[in-house]
Image (cartoon, rainbow, N blue to C red; front, side, top):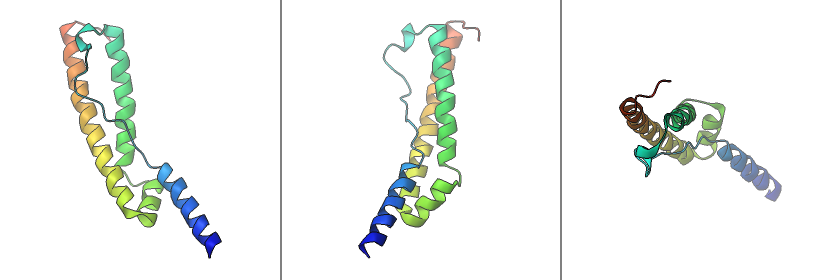
Length: 107
């Protein structure tokens, strides 16, 4: 019995560690006005990676299904985090694009 419980706990831990947990960025950051065009471009690329990860968290994936079966609150938290991260990334994107336009960046 103890062995089965250990196996189930280990499987749950592995499954939950596979859940998507994208970064939630802030809309504006200290020093935004000092960013160069190259730095803005780099941040835009990083935002696309965060968006892609957030979108994974909102889809039905093997990790999300397993999490729902083993510990259903994890899927709710995962989806909420992904939604928040995607909204924050979209807001940050708007700020960076406006800043790039103001600085007349060409990329």
